[in-house]
Length: 208
Image (cartoon, rainbow, N blue to C red; front, side, top):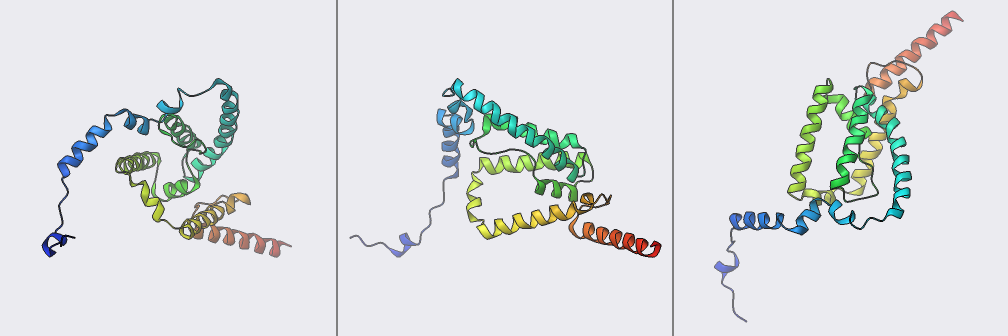
């Protein structure tokens, strides 16, 4: 075996950025790249007409579920219901061409609505935040940063989901009892609910 010198062993070769960019540009112009970024070019030619009825029933079921869900999410975000409907349907239309998973629902979520409600003061801020989030997601897709999801552990995901569920339930506690609350935040909702409940009980006690 040939001996490796220390200088060669610890020497680090710098990457050739120019060749990497050229190679990436060449790969983007191939048929495989088009099929990768536009999966509809792969499955649409193989689509069979006997799938049409089943897909129609599935799409109708998901659509009827998404309509009231989107209206509620728009309300949670502090916007009018039509913004929730726009967010629910436009993403589905785009996902027809760019989607890679058939068992998924694209649209707003309760966590998104809470974050928008906390940071967006009106519809203009909500639209701007939606645009900026789309730019970030597009950049992450171009850089193939989806691998970062593998570093998020299951306990973190479970804790985040449970916290979101508790926060959402707490934000709707006043609406559940027919109380008009000025806030949907966790502490604010409970403080307002408890204060109104105590006042009503005291008034009933004194008037009894």
